[in-house]
Length: 157
Image 1 (spheres, rainbow, N blue to C red):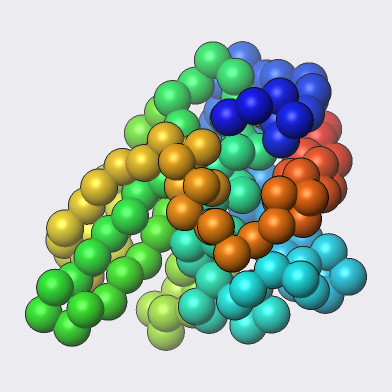
Image 2 (image 1 turned 60 degrees about the vertical axis):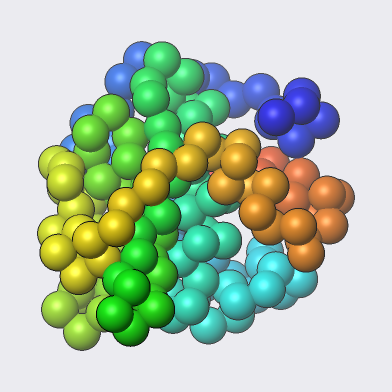
C-alpha cells in the first residue's frame, strides 16, 4: 500500500489480549459513529453485514500500530449456505470486531486463535491487509484515507 494511504502512527512492539480488546472496543465505537463512516457501504448496519469492510480497515490500522506483527484479514466461507465472514488475525490472536452480529456473541470477539467461528465458516483464506482494502473498490481513495487516519487516531494510545 502506498504511503498516501498509510499514515504515521506510533508503533507498539507486540499486541496482548488486553491491548487487542481495547482496540476492538475502540474500533466498535468508531464504526458506530455515523459521522465517521456515513459514506462507507454496509457500515451503517454495524455490526451486521459490515465484517469485510470493518476488518479491512482494522487490519490496516493494526498493521501500523503493531508494526512488527504479522497481520492478516481472514476471509472465511461456508459453501453450503454461501455465507462469508471476515475477521483480523494478528500474531495468532483473533480480533473479530463484528462477531456480535451473531446471537452467541454479545461483544466483539478477541481470543487466541483459531477463531471459534471457523467451525461455522470452515473454508479460510488469509489476505494481506492491503489486498483486503483493495477489495473495497467501491470506496473512494479519499474516503479510505480519511477513515484510516481517523481510525489510527481512535486506536492511538
